[in-house]
Amino acid sequence: MKTYKNLYEKIYSYDNLYLAYRNARKGKTKRPYVKEFEENLENNLIDFRFELITFTYSPRPLDNFILKDPKTRKISRSHFRDRIIHHAIINVIREIFEKRFIHDSCANQLGKGNLFSIKRFETFRRKVTKNFTSKAFCLKADVKHYFQEVDHEILIKIIKNKIKDKKVVELIRKILKKNASGEQNKGMPLGNLTSQFFANVYLNELDYFIKYQLKAKYYIRYVDDFVILHQNREQLNKWKKEIEKFLAEKLMLELHPQKSKVISLSKGVDFVGFRNFYHFKLLRKRNLRSMLKKIDTYRDKLVSKEKMMEIFQGWNAYAKWANTYNLRKSVLSKINKINKLNLDNT
Image 1 (cartoon, rainbow, N blue to C red):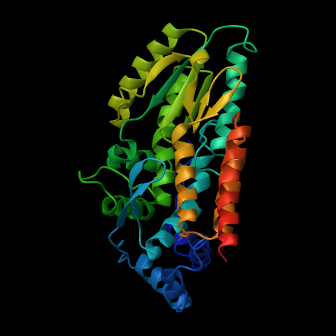
Image 2 (image 1 turned 180 degrees about the vertical axis):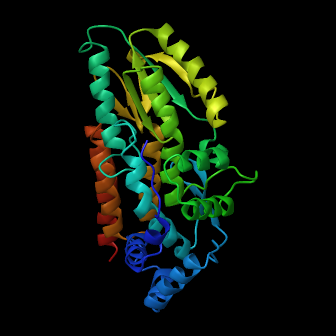
């Protein structure tokens, strides 16, 4: 297995830090903290270099808030300067790990995402049912409290299998320790680039186990949700037990007992925001509820017309992958009614 040394200098190079800053500011150029950082940009980046070179860099405390879209989640956001460091690290190590990821690891990678996942699910569903001419089943599984339960020492061990630069490993360890959940040496915060990236690094171990030891042909993972399709229900139940054992022994994780089960494909499978049946797909109800809440904020004039239309276009592009023609028409009608009402009141 190829390993990598002498990476630390690449992380603190001025060019890499500048690129990391550019990546960290995307979509946030108007935020006050970005403007403040940019007022003294060159000196701030030089300070970063000095802190990294002298090993005096220390991450700042996280900013925690609750997000209720579409479900209630605690999001922890790093200080902008720390987000630049996260990007600087990932810029250097991303390719080392991503080229080992399986094709059907679908989240947080360029060119992949929800729609990539759903296309792969459709392809596998057709193959396993021989174009819907035979019965098939799906193990739909969810790793319980995944981000809270990631074990730092196991993750570091996985990273060290590829990266032999001790300075890089210790920098990553420092970030993990600062970002730990309540239990020491455990957990990664939702919302950080490093968390999204290392989530895939950690569960890549599971991907390899399922693909190359269990030899499951039709397997897709999206962060901590995954599906395996097969013609035999008993085979999926057997694999489920083996996966539970692997997770417990190798990764200190467990499957969610209520959300992990074998079901018939004909009954519909919830995956990446859709309920997938043999011949059609439905949008999950919570996705629609989230969109309707955003329309409420527009009605209350908390967002602009331009922003509302931008939100709708994104939602519409996603929702059209399901059988939602009338639903999308209805949602647009609600927005247009508000537009008309606002116009009449001007």
